[in-house]
Length: 443
Image 1: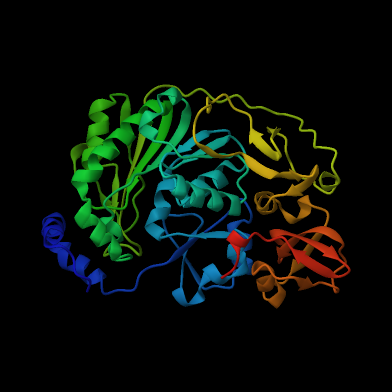
Image 2: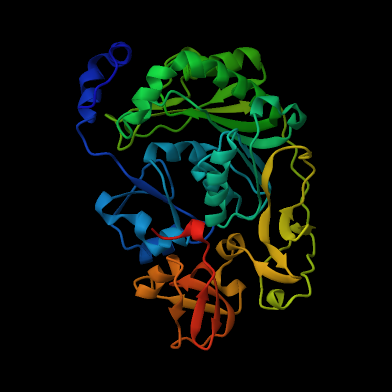
């Protein structure tokens, strides 16, 4: 077993009592792996029809599944097509239990690497708006790539300190806080986190978490709902943070989360509706999850139905994309499709506003990889689709030039695997010149 700090073991023994040995024994078991189907691109039912892996449903997640490590789903073309996201199963719970309604404005406050934002965006299904934030600009770049790969069209990605955003008071219908924490629930999965814990334990993270949750409460609309979660077992970072929020935000109340076999209820009187997940009780790692609601009546957001007029460019004549509830905005040489909203985003560190459609190079429009991933095959006239097991599929993902003389195609094409877009390429005389971005490359 990995070496755990004595102070940590002592606290876990006091916390778990008769279950302490079971917890220690869990470190000898294999780590659990999971994936979540991206329902923006494919239904769970249709994915299971084409899935090449042996899957088992995650009980608490409607689109989550366990897989066997030897299947290596991160090496399959479907992963590059954004049909699923690889996610630790207990981490699927926070975005699953946050209620999402059509046209909601949602804030994911600590969003990187983006799996929870992608799930929330899939539940919005193109309506409303999701603001995905991470205080670290480098981590926000990873978040951006996740949302692009998943084909999200209605998101803003930013890198801000949430505790300073007073301008968003009463702005969001739903908020998710997967708070930075000491990571005790991930010790089995990543032993490197133990070293981090020795440097920064609960005494470091709890004040940060309290600032985040109170700031988020101010941004939540009356009647809105918020999830607070961590991947740690520390009472100081879990129940005590919720107690602090209830004491300082008197219009907040805890809602009961549905229980599943192995879930443990919160440890204080006011947090009985919250849940704790332990690796010796469930097939997964560790998590704490709370669902809160702000008292009052929630007013619905205005719905904007715009008739978007596409530019008079050859590329757009082949595009059949539904762009009914947003607007086209050109900034310098880049063209964006952005949701219509009344949020004040001026002066913030915005990495991406809406969907980057592409850019103009010498006044000729070049579509982006983000657009390719947001398209369905029937939304662009010129496609080439390879079977997932065609060796050219992997070669395309490796940015190689391909022989496509067996395909009836010419000009700019959308390259697909089994009908699911991967990116663009340009065909001339039966040879496809690859336009797959190097930073997406199959390695």
